[in-house]
Length: 427
Image 1 (tube, one colour):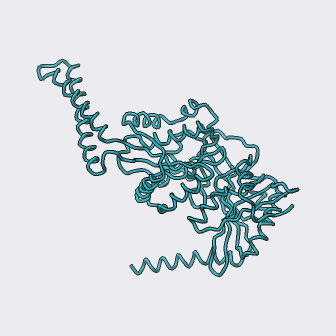
Image 2 (spheres, helix red, strand yellow):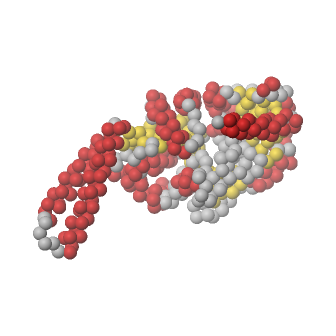
Image 3 (cartoon, rainbow, N blue to C red):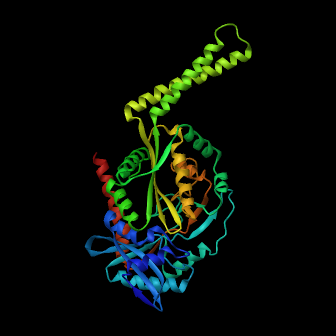
């Protein structure tokens, strides 16, 4: 077998895009280009040939370290039959030689090989391969398994929800939790409109991500990150930002019309002695009138602060091959009662199905399912759409320089912790 450290773009993407077992957007040529521009990582497109036929390939992202060292990461790699231990061994040895020459300390791999999958009823989904055997094979070859993490400690999520979009839409929607169906119906009442973002609207999505970042206490990316991803990915593939929008002037006008109708109905009942049924009817009309009046006041204040047309949600969907991933989602702090987030979700789900996408991945959830887990709300939201709960086999490191690996993965993080503690103590 022969090793190629610089596969031409067309050959590489054709192989990865059409691989029956391991096609993933994080292994695409475009992702390597994006990672170089936005993350300062250096892409290497390497592969193994058997009789001039490509049988294994991977994107290696090189992270430069001090003193000329580096480490390499194959996100969701490799693109090959991971159950073929002899092929895995040979490919790993070839990659090891390649990165050693470039002062590579280690190689990180986190294959999207499923360890366990459950449907929405908790039934185990059987697969053609056994994920635990792949773990064993990788360890035999020399990989160090980094454990079965439960939250978002690893480079990519170890858990996710996936939907099979080859099923009829009515079957998919039947799995939605009743609260999802209710909120989608509520979004129709508020006339939520969902549209595809134009290039100039990427900044609107970014603003939603900043709001979400502040609310959820996580660090997002700058505007150029999303603009670069949108531009680079749409050169050869497809990505879309779905924006959920509301027109408050229309909502206020509808509420005012309802208010007028309720007052007219109340005037017909009058103030004279009433029967029990009329008293109950009047009580209900007054309750509804109070709610409508309150809504008008609330939405008028919101309109004065934010304007009439407000973007409430933005979801970044990336497509590759026959799969799609809900990569990023940002939500406004206001008007959550409109159900806009749910309408946006179901809109891009239907869009993906209509395009012939087979697998729809919600890109990340947790394995620690205690309700006190701060991330449980995210899990509960995604679960309500009825996808299969998927657990991947996790991260692996293949060490090529044991001494420097110890320095950069143990001593340097320890030194940084001590430095941070000292800085905090001085405040």
